[in-house]
Image (cartoon, rainbow, N blue to C red):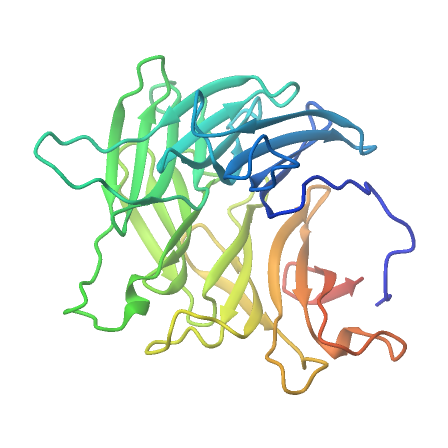
Length: 366
């Protein structure tokens, strides 16, 4: 391993004096642009010092192409939680919050023009309680369904502490085609709060089976992957991980039933503990479309400061389209094992790219 990159690529900085959080970054091969989306509260970046969603695009040389801010007016959008390309890669779909409600915004990547804006709002004339929502970015637009050739928007979010999975007809007058509400244990049934910790984070597809899709993230306190049918929203299987708490990235292998994912095992997020976290172990897994786990590994080392907890996490995973047996993972770690003797031994993060073959054997790292 090397201490640092020998040269910089894309030295691009965007933001102001407060907080910027990026929850979406995608490369679009059709437009040749890199798209970035997130949330900011910087008044010297956004128009004001309150929550604004931002989306911008740069080319491969790092040149600014376009950028937009959104707030809780007009196209209300205050936070980008995640994104995914549509089924034909003609647009990029963002999911987040606007006016305290889940929002879907589908953009043309070349100029940022809006193709679709959809806000989900619970409506019940007998209800006097305003629902509380959370979004973690799970969204997907299928431009042409395998069964009826219609376009549908798939999304998942939390409403009143329950995961909602919906399919909406993607027309000028959108209609909910079906919805699925996840059951929850009550505090009486399961006193430990971990049973109610959840994050519906990614919706992905199966390159070998157009009739199904996957919802992944966290459910009942564990990293989870679930398969559903597109036509009726029926769950086919559910796989959870005992040694993985969060899924931070998941990717399909083109033309293959295999997919990979990675995330974190929160060592202190065990049953019976507080939700605050202090230690992480990175985790990477390989799955088949029948729900079977081919392999799963954890990656961790020793913090350079012996009294400090491990902070080893995985935030990205991708496959080489030219050689789909090769996997690359992006790790954020605090392990002295990856540093040379000349490197600062303090309690700092290192960014590491690790490459694996299809069996999980490490091929290299930088």
